[in-house]
Image 1: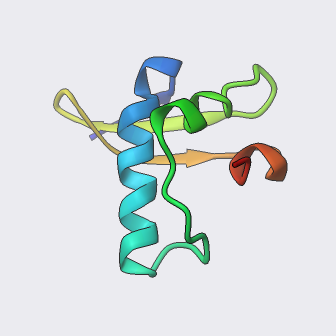
Image 2 (image 1 turned 90 degrees about the vertical axis):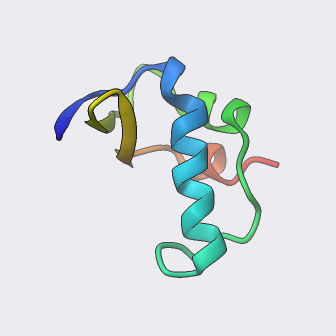
Length: 73
């Protein structure tokens, strides 16, 4: 596995992982699934986002985002 800076091209994969956490209720108290477009807003050039790859697939991420961007409807 390799950690790297995430790019907007990773938004769909990050949304998939984020939504898994919502579905299993283990990783977050959030209840609204996110789309790739929602996650794309997190890339503001200020707050870091890290993607973890296993081969060619993003399997994990970490993000620091403004709360209003994370929960924007």
